[in-house]
Amino acid sequence: MRTGMLAHYWLNMNPNNSKRTIFYISDSTGITVEALGLCLLSHFDGFTCKQVRMPFIDSVEKAKEAIEIINATQEQDSARAILCMTIVSPTIRALFHLTGGLCLDMFGTFVNPLSSELGMPANETIGMSRRVVGAEYRNRIEAINFTLAHDDGITEAGLKDADVILVGVSRSGKTPTSLYLAMQYGIRAANYPIIPEDLERNELPGTLVDHRDKIFGLTIDPERLHKIRNERRPNSRYAELANCRQEIKDAEALMQREGINMMDSTSRSVEEISSLIMQQLSFRAAKKMLVS
Image (cartoon, rainbow, N blue to C red; front, side, top):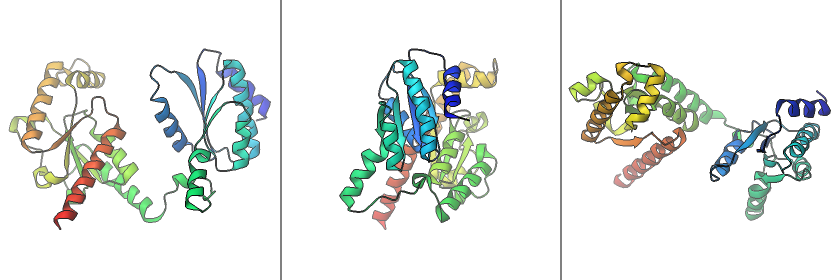
């Protein structure tokens, strides 16, 4: 597609409005720069913008096509675009600076000063920030497979190999947290729902008591749980607010009695919960080293 056609297509697909536009520009997947950009934007309550991802801008030709879209967007918005970039090539980065947009150049801002401080050139191979090779990559794949095989209490086999076991009532966030731990950190995470039968017995499910040192509990606000469950099974006993309140109350009492560290998932993201778990794992490992 020619550059003029690209700009025409972009303008037709994005009618004029009062929002500014932020572009996430990368010579690789763009995952890193988007995460950094979203983190920065989270500090500005009430700010809204159009968000455009431009991955794999790894040549001057592709950069010029992207710049035509950026310039056309700035004219349409009557405002400077915000450009978040992770571009290795200084030549390509310089082209984007000519747009007049606000350039948040992650490489220029952080990599270049670090290179000067260390007295050595940075590796300019594209995609280095996302490269995972060898044993680390295999470990993540194995962790994902383990987590999928131990989702929602499917099996108790192999729990001795788990790094983390998440427990909590149904729909409290166990599965997404387990998968994030596996994909991001290579953690073998199993998860088990605390069901009404467990609450009636006032005991942890299955043989989890034998792995208490690996267990982390998730809890959630009953009103929030009610909304989530009602979307899944509307007008059911499972989703009733009174039932959600009772389940949460009983599950929290059980976890407190068992000495399980609890985290509230109501207003925390999967990333935040996972970070808290990793912090606790680090503390536990440090204590074991001190004892030994």
